[in-house]
Image (cartoon, rainbow, N blue to C red; front, side, top):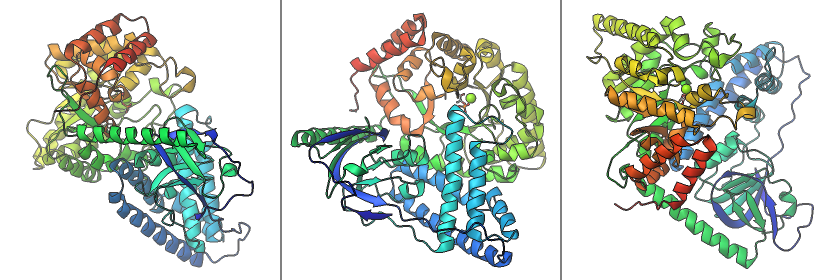
Length: 612
Ligand code: PEP
Ligand code: MG
């Protein structure tokens, strides 16, 4: 990146101007714009076919080594970043590192080198081919909705790693933002995820770009870094002159160019209010999740990738309520074996230092997919309607070896601390029985081999994600050791509205009284049978929803670690009576909109309390 504060081609106009972009990271900042242009990419000759493959392989090998070293250096910088940033950037670096390892990408590049291509061209063509495959998989319909977002992100990852390799092959350096003045507002046509990883949030007041969108890696990274940011602010660069002052509102997406004294003063008030809010949430970490009437609730974290661990430890969460083990299979070349899986679970359990870890066995199928499992012929995606096909526990009972391996790995790792094992997408008690039989058999086998595993075996529970499981919760509770309500899927199956499809997004409403009835039935059944019950769908991370869920009978919540402080604040502001009132009104509502409106009114009248 080349940084400059010189005027662009078009002369800037005088006076305050407002512009709208996409708000991607909340917060308000005021400062001078520093424009960072990206240096041109080196030219690549894609026509050559006369190169020496051995020589090009050596060049590729060196470029890979340099790229890995750069990623390691970026990783070392992680500890300097806010914890949310560590998580996002850490996981992205992990993806890049895997791509540079013995991956499909590497194999594809090497095949092209064998055809006599120059390394730069081989990298460029292979990364483009893989990106294209992600965006338009041959023989399959183009991804839509959330799938399309994920596909664009994955395509971006391939292109990003390709650019890094080409820069290293041609010796074109990356520039850092270290030359930017402290407190500057970074303005660029585009910020790539790897550039975002170099941003020091203590020095950059905000980021604004002309391109980009709210769901890409860059946006996620900027949010994680806590840097106010607005992307897709078209036409901004043309408005900037020498030392142009800006007010950037990352919450609303508004950018004010050359603010008047009055606008600047109002912005300063907002900057201070936002800083106070962050401080308050920070203090909440150490306080209990106690209702104003005294009852203490349990807040745990959902974990999707290992890089989230440090954040969970610092969030104030009391353990992991949902460890989605899919990450082990998602970017893997082969299905991980017992030893490999144990090596992943064990340090996580140790890191939670005695707080429980609930590991969900792999929930493959529907909108989730795994190259490793597909290659092993498991879950070929042939279902006409994948959400209603072979997924979750159904798939595992068809491929028992996979379930046995995972049970065994978890039982071995359970020496490190308290563990619970959870089954996804259960719709009948028979599935639980079949899984428990396998669980017990695996336990006996390990004991026979002299492996030290807990006695009795760790609790085996089920996710309540289908209306069938909720309606049969009393029967289920007699055989399950615990319940975790997965409202993401429960909402989808109750309302027959795909959780990933945009065209039914308005129908997909976890506040629909039908969903709430099922949540209450499940909580009641668990109470009657004295089984622990928690909720781990997205709803559990909504501060407005949690008091309602308390009223429906829930006392344990699992959510993304970043949501814990806000949920705690909401909990500490309400009494059990408030919660029960909300629940009974919600259950009488005619639809989800009525419930949402009621919750918003309650939230507006609450007074958050953080004192202790
Ligand atoms: C759920 O369905 O609510 C859940 C937590 O599982 P996932 O989102 O992983 O399907
Ligand atoms: Mg689910």
